[in-house]
Length: 196
Ligand SMILES: *[C@@H]1O[C@H](CO)[C@@H](O)[C@H](O)[C@H]1NC(C)=O
Image 1 (cartoon, protein in one colour):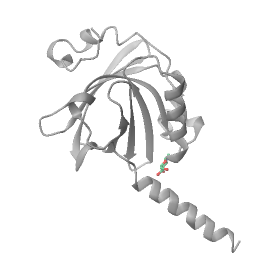
Image 2 (image 1 turned 30 degrees about the vertical axis):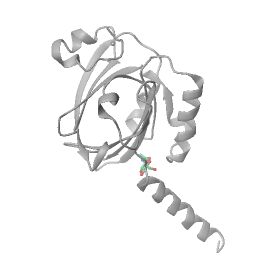
Image 3 (image 1 turned 90 degrees about the vertical axis):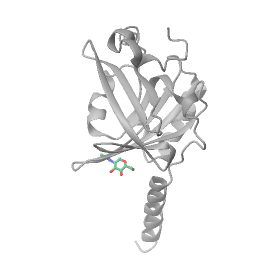
């Protein structure tokens, strides 16, 4: 017991440090990051997510930035044979790539991206009932390479999550095909990645 205690304390310190040190893509180029992304994999310890994850399908996020750097995200996801849309606004928090939800206590970071293929988002959510965190793999194409998936899976334990909290979302055209109907007109101008 006496030897176990120091290592437990160390382990806890590591966790705290891991929580505090989520990296952000240096000098995030918001113009290159904007546009349409597929949400292809999610790992989260959110209890609602864990209950629903096996029924989820790939969704699409359209990201744009306000002149002052705030991030606007439009999400469209297939839920019960319908396309549900959500619009979320995040305020820039300190540096480009780090955002806070306006109403909810939600903290979003663009951990890394190569702009043209993938991005990893880190999301922490604090509510009275529970705190949870999530990692999301966003990709420009709906097909994701095994190498990229492998890279994402290696990130999961480093963020204190486990592989059973991961879901790789099955491909779905259900909503992406109809995206112009869901958001007609100007709202979809950030499309720059061949999704016409
Ligand atoms: C999820 O993980 C984070 C970070 O490890 C932790 O702070 C939080 O309490 C966890 N939430 C649940 C519901 O397990």
